[in-house]
Length: 122
Image (cartoon, rainbow, N blue to C red; front, top):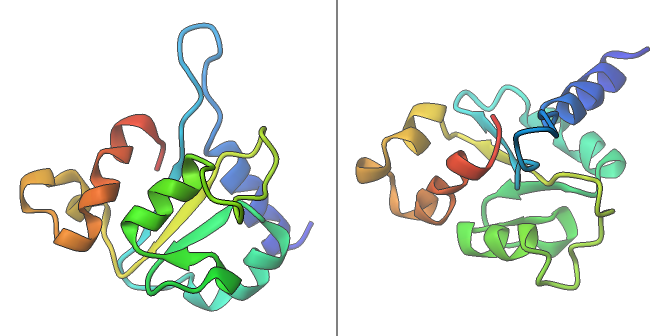
């Protein structure tokens, strides 16, 4: 198993939940304040159709602002082409978990995503 395979497996396990008393998470939020994982995103995008990124809109890299990401996880856009069993992963470069948690002080670009911390997994 390669490091890349282990990372993909870890992202898949992030969406695990107790089926007896929980609903599946709507999304997996992946904050990366220091942008340590950013160089791997092109390779991961090739392997994970459900990997989305917060940033300037670019349909080719499945990157966009918060409102677009919300539409993608709701599967209301034609480019949301992953299987039903895959939980979308939103990579958040330059964003810390604390920024999302502090809803009252959350920066405007993150506001559409702040609620997802309650329906998703980190």
